[in-house]
Image (cartoon, rainbow, N blue to C red; front, side, top):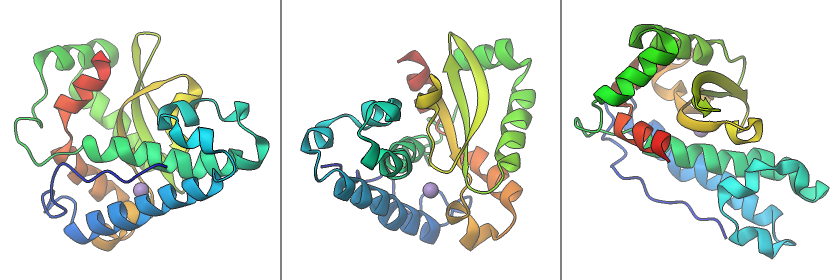
Amino acid sequence: MFKLMPLNYQYNDLEPYIDAKTMEIHHSKHHQTYIDKLNASLKEHPDLLNKDISELVKDIDSLPESIRISVRNNGGGHYNHSLFWNLMTPDLDQQKISDNLSKLIQTNFGDFKTFQEKFTESAVGRFGSGWAWLVSKNGKLEIISTANQDTPLELGCNPILGLDVWEHAYYLKYQNRRPEYIDAWWNVVNWQEVEKRLNK
Ligand code: MN
């Protein structure tokens, strides 16, 4: 069975950028619901309950047809959120971007500001619900966005940084002001984790 992992920090630790109530509901209700629904839909396929979540969502077309939609939505939801929590941190050291990573971003996007603008544009521009991503593909860094709970894995991309732009991620504090939420979120990015993912 898939299980909800606790956060590495407290629900109120990302204040004032991400409020405690949003974190609590997002983690303990939304993420938990994806996991519960995923487990329920795999009842008839116990072998799949032991798979690594990234393996499960990577090749949805290879799965039995009756569970594809649930794995896409609920399995994707579990995978994406598991990444998302670890990509944020209240720890000031983890929020520092290393020279090595800075240089890589410069090589791929010109400079950090351009990268940040492009990522933000992708996150603001995602119509409806979805995610913005920094991914690595064939040794290059790219910015993409996915709809709903679709993951970059399906597109052959390795997600390095991800931002949830579903309204449930920001509505309590920011209501319709998605760009404000995104601006605030940059303050809590765990660049150490980003680099770890890049080196994987
Ligand atoms: Mn979410």
